[in-house]
Length: 502
Image (cartoon, rainbow, N blue to C red; front, side, top):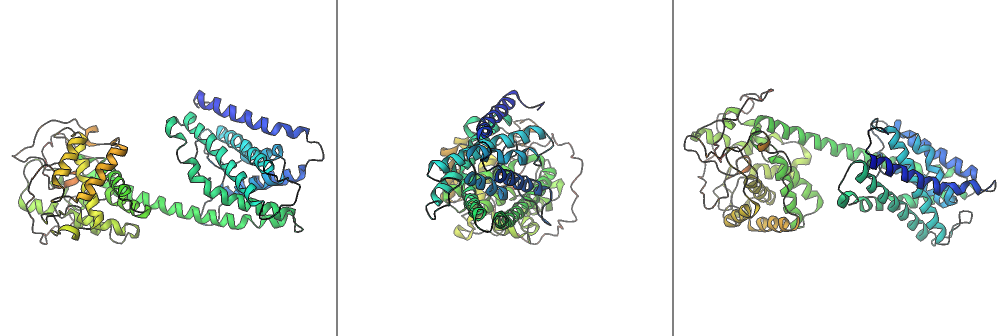
């Protein structure tokens, strides 16, 4: 355990001591105790843990239903074995079932021994508590279960098992990974209670089959659908991980090409989710809006780097080229299925309700809802983040500007939703910004160009600043033929003034 914080070592030690105290009474149970059943369940659980080293073709069984500092909750498909032990064994023996498998389970190389000890230490009290609750509600391990009366004690035992793990897991998050105490336990119980109740039902089925005339082999049949369901669950999470990797790669490419707005995309995604949550949109649409906010400026990959980094005024033709970046972005993400709804926001986030935006000059509700959300989030972050030419504006000032432009440039409903969310949650722009790369200079620009305050080129929400309508005609610019993204970033501290159309 060398390298672990002293608080983590002490916490894991206390948990291990509690597990030992839970299992200690097993020594006094005598030869009449169901030792063979406990040994069989312990062996079965150990095999389940080891099977994670040999996943099914193309998949990997997830480690747990929640991620803790040292491995989190037990492998989802093996939890019924532990709960079956709570239903079939006295509490001290139930506490012992998990120990051999947990101590031999796969673990991350860093602090592997500590993770295994912790895994066994948290499972012991959880199984002991579940068995105690099951007995306290009138069920005896050696008696035949009476349906449907046994369902309530089984559910209570599964909920207790989940609650003990949540309490212990939150503590190790605070002690080992130094999570803030006020947030270490947040969501642990809620995320895992449903799955553990299902595992409790599966564990009860195992216990019933174990005691039936068919014997223990019949109980093994319960594990097959659990294993397959966890494999499907793992497939889903791998697909989500691939989506995240795709988005991360696109955002990184934009940041390399235009480091001027580093971190802007992630913050726009965060603000878009705040608006969506306030509007009461469903979870899938909130996810789509997060993707849309993060990728709203991906079309910059089709804009020549010399224009993005140009000091001095832009010519009308250069301005038209930059204002094609929403269409470039729309084409870049075309064909990526999970970004279908985000494409509308990428294409239309520079439209204005009064029709003076681009690329198509849409008005009112012709502008898609997702684009209206991202437009407000984009402008808000642009005003509240530090840029090379000016300091960040305070949130109240940015809110006042958004309200001033509501109805002409922004959808008032989206502005109201963002303001309400800010009042409730506040704004914490703790992601990387351009200020990390260079300090604000306070200069207003070169060549008479005043920088407008908009993330990634949004029209500036600073009073009645008119944005000239741009007739978007086909411009002979091939996004593939422009300058390649440099592998080695070039110096850019001289760049102070920028045009808001970018």
